[in-house]
Length: 181
Ligand code: IMP
Ligand code: MG
Image (spheres, rainbow, N blue to C red):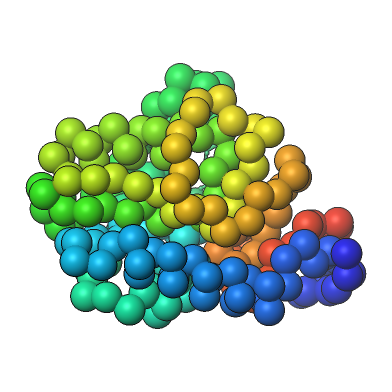
């Protein structure tokens, strides 16, 4: 892995901007083929998915709509209970629509299994997930993730929307934090 510096923090490049760009082009093509003739509504999970969503949607060559939801998990102690709190709900009606949840990373799977449940209850025609990254080793709750950008090992990564204490979201690549400034 290449080492680099960003705002005085040492980072190892896990996925380069070029690798990400190519993979997103492929995902966009696949989603375009799968959703042709359907009523696609992409719902991005704030804040982490904002970079991924804005790149991905420009590779989807279909009429579609976009919306956002913001969630937070309850404190670490209760996290395994899978309780998720909605900070900002989606604005659109989901009834009869083909919802594609856009997430930055699937880790324990708790956030996404909660979101799938609530969106299904709102009578969406279909609910699928596209996740930029997947850390399968960390899974507590099984979720079917239809589209995955990259599977990564169990390590904490930042960049391309992903944060550490709200920082690093603006990195154009995915990096492993070696030391913080
Ligand atoms: P989970 O799947 O419910 O555990 O939650 C996934 C959420 O945890 C993601 O949306 C991220 O906000 C956060 N997260 C998990 N792993 C990482 C990481 O390696 N870097 C940054 N955020 C992470
Ligand atoms: Mg997140």
